[in-house]
Length: 188
Image 1 (cartoon, rainbow, N blue to C red):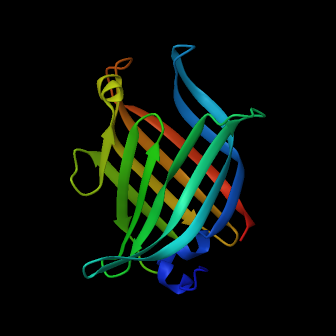
Image 2 (image 1 turned 30 degrees about the vertical axis):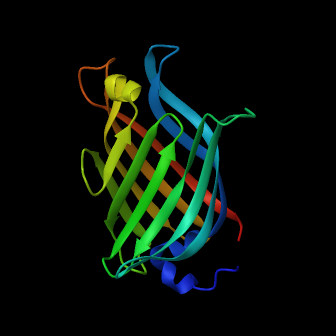
Image 3 (image 1 turned 45 degrees about the horizontal axis):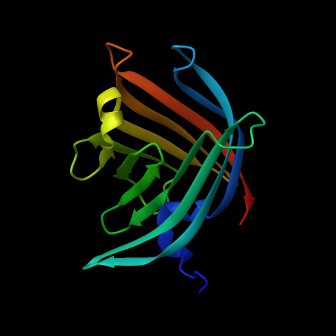
């Protein structure tokens, strides 16, 4: 059934479609080298609209999304995500719920208006509303204690700056694993 309520997607409406970006930069700990560094990547994201999802008096509209990122010309992605971006118009909240196949699940959220072109979503380990859940291995070695992403939406492009704050066995201090990219729409 075709989706015909695009006006109810709020700030997520411009994201519907397929997006690609060639200039991604991932700053992380490289286990093979035992040091931190940047990894350049290309990325493809698809957003498909759905809704409404009714929870009693709450009515959500959203985007089903799938993301993959590749280093250089590699065939297999080094990172993938699946999940949802959600808009709660009555609460003025935008949310991103996603799973990374390493065993981490995040529900991040933040304030927005229906016409917002920039918004920030956050999550914290142990937060019952906007939180992070991870498997035992990660909890013991590389626990994600906080997550933040700022999204900026333009005409036919969007960008993000993402910070996953990790408590890692390799460091005494918290480590900021960051990602950023600018993507352009390649399909509606």
